[in-house]
Length: 307
Image: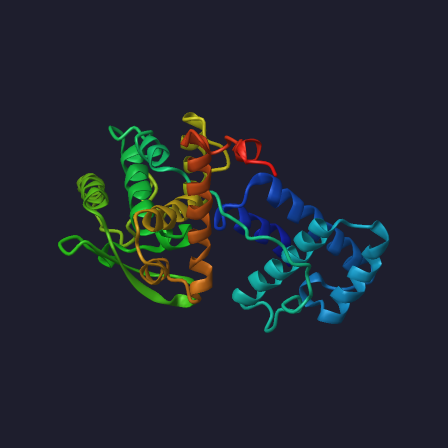
């Protein structure tokens, strides 16, 4: 039996689990790509093999719907992301949506947790159980190193130098980087591995495994982080939220952007600079909340001498 893969469904799962997009954003992308799929099937096209000209014609067909500028931006973003996903996985050679023109917009500020929320989240797992101890170790390591969830699931035991406190991991494009691991994360990893070794007859190379001894997957991590966050009243928290929090807290504590870029494995520093915008916004919000004269207007004009 021939099985036809649902690449749209795979991409939406990637957005939710890997990129940590909020439920509403994923649903919006789902609606946009559903429109494209209907149009492609109507014209006997394969959505995977659409060309730039095909996409332009579809956008022209959509002109009658009088979409808002925000909707147009999101729609083109969905196209670019979807075909970039297919290109990255080797299903297409070129992204047909790469140079589609989208209206300019303001800076996107990703969601992050404050340091108190991070501490609360780390405290949720029941570390008296094997699964709870594993999950605590995962949370500690992902926040300590700013890992993508795909990087966390692929880590091998040999990738961690426990004495030096260094993790070697592979990021996007199979690029290898070395990231320091804090003492707290190292201790939790040691505790987890000590428990694992007591029950295993054969050593498994993956650092994190399920209770049955199989390598953990992205969905498991996504689900337990979401569950833990909801227990302490936090919404729309994903594995990627930990990565955003890692970078934001480093910048807030005066780390230089170049160092943060290397720790995150960003190819372009402009991607890292988004976190400076986050901290600027955070500082403004803090100032406006706590400074006694942040909103107090001056009566200088009333007291000025008149001619």
